[in-house]
Image (cartoon, rainbow, N blue to C red; front, side, top):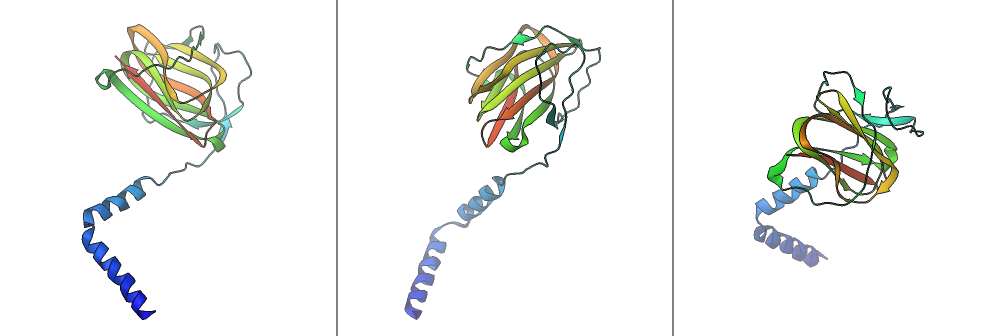
Length: 196
């Protein structure tokens, strides 16, 4: 038994000399970075403003995720007629055409999540990338002039992919974006891009 222990310790000693310390340190860093961070889940009542064009029954309680960057829309909000969304998978524009991006990860056990994004940038299209599976209800895009364009996802489920969320080829100043979504996988990552 004593010889076996000495042999095992000898093998570990040889391996520790053969493997550079930097490799072991990198391995430790990777483990720390991948540790998931869970937010406390607090449900609250869904708020939609007067004039909101989606008339179907909406979820009553949601988890609200405030925007990381606060943006104020100066003009009074005016809702434009809702746009029905066609979920065609597209390629994202080249990296140098992206002006802004932000993402939100939602978990299945959170239920409906009201995710808000402070864009505050000028561009010509918004893209939505889904990693996982998500059920989407609607999106609101608020412009600097106070107009709010609602995109109606019609409460359908969508798979991973990149989609054009809204196109405004004339170039508009987008102040905020809001998406009401629910994860159909363990976790779903929603990323919004503004392109020029």
